[in-house]
Structures are given as structure tokens and as C-alpha cells.
Length: 162
Image 1 (cartoon, rainbow, N blue to C red):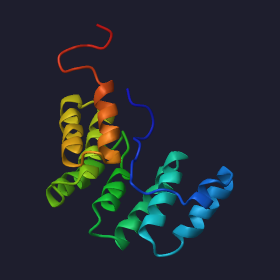
Image 2: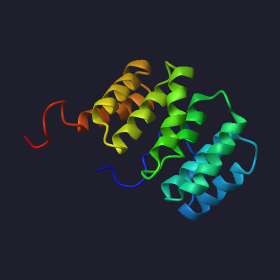
Image 3: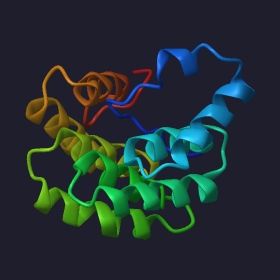
Image 4: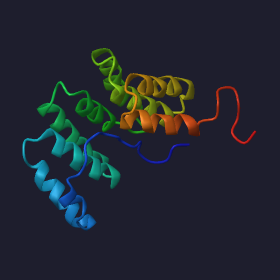
């Protein structure tokens, strides 16, 4: 069973001057940067909040980022994942599904769809989406993480430990 919130992967990196700060100062620096109309800064701050298990605050940042970058598949995918909860997974899936049609070759969309399918115990579908993330965007952070997840899953038709 996948615990907690699904993880979010992006190609964004926290600036080195910020990443070297103590955690509390880093969070404040990310918050200050996110106060500007900068979608990437909002995504980075939202991910920090997500990782601190503050999903509602993270979701607000992701929504604000999506409003600033309505054609960016990474930002839109993160905003969709930000709506995920095990109690109401349909909300995230209802946003990610259309993104697969809008951005059919975007590894970021396929990867995160695969992650959410894992979180909801839909392993065959998760394998398919993670495999697409690898084939559509080889060498990307999405493909690298998808390969790790695929390697950790027991092959179809077998049980782990046998």
C-alpha cells in the first residue's frame, strides 16, 4: 500500500542559494519567490508544502501556477496531482485524463498518471503509463523514476517474494 501522498517529480530545481539554507529559511525563501507571478516558483513552493504534508496549501499554489501557465504540461500535471487524495482520487484522474489527450507525447503526464494509478492499486494500468513515460521521454527525470518504479513492481502474474 502506498503511504501518504504520491510524490511529484519535475525538471525544476530549487536555486542553489536557496537549497543551501536551513529548511525553515528555505521554505520562507520559496514562499517569497512564489509571491511573484512566476509559475515555476509557485510549483517549487507548492512541492515544498506537499512534501511537508500540507496538501491544501500546496494545491492552492499549484492552481495559481496553472493559471499563469495554462499551456505548460508540467505545471498542469502538477496542478492535477495536487488535487489527489485517496478519499477522492477521481478529481485528479478527471484532470489528468484530458491532459493525456492534450499532450499525448508528454512523459510528465504519463509518469504522474502512472504514480496515481499505483497509489490507487491499479497496477496493470500503472505499468502501462510508466512504460509510456519511459518510451516518450527517455533520459528524462520522469523516465528515470518510471524505470525505478517499474523495477520495484513484481512482474505481471507473479507475487513478490516468490
